[in-house]
Amino acid sequence: MALNLTQKQEVVAELANVAATAHSLVAAEYAGMTVAQLTELRRKARDAGVYLKVAKNTLVARAVEGTDYQCVSDALVGPLLYAFSVEEPGAAGRLVKDFAKDNEKLVPKLVSIGGEMYPATHVEVLASLPTREQALSMLLSVMVQPATMLVRVLAEPATQVTRVVKAAGEKQAA
Image 1 (cartoon, helix red, strand yellow):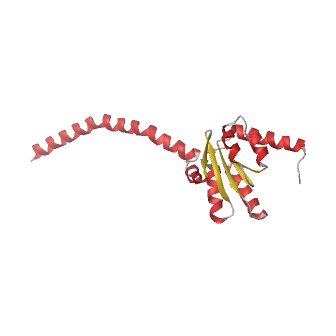
Image 2 (tube, helix red, strand yellow; image 1 turned 30 degrees about the horizontal axis):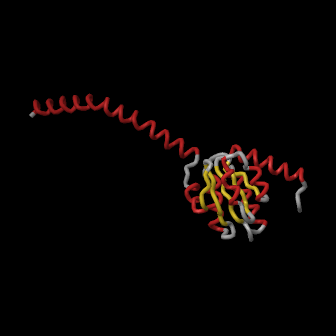
Image 3 (tube, rainbow, N blue to C red; image 1 turned 90 degrees about the horizontal axis):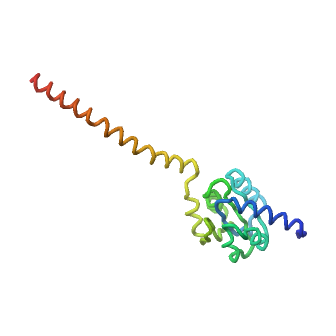
């Protein structure tokens, strides 16, 4: 069913709002997927914090004008499904990569992050980005390591004194 002008403006406004705050974008061809498969993909997208939309490429091109995703405007060709990572940068990549394993009809076409467009092969790179919790735990471990080393260095003189006293005691006992 064709959209009237008001509906098209609403779609463009909605996509523009999402694109303005999204961390990354993955566009994928979905031709040949069943309704059940698309429904399952949408359910997984909601659970993962990914905004998923099937829209006309011209509407998406208008929506991404003035955002970091303007670089993909010329590459939007064919029936595409757009996955915007809203909560964390790698979520859309993980969603498309994992779903494409079981559904060969879902084929990634392009990736965009940080104002740069990358080929479909970068879905693997995007999917390998750590989640927010993983990144925080890595940061915490890096921050804790100097403190741990400081405690070890400060405790070492006391340990050496203890060893000397013990050795002297053993020498006198012998």
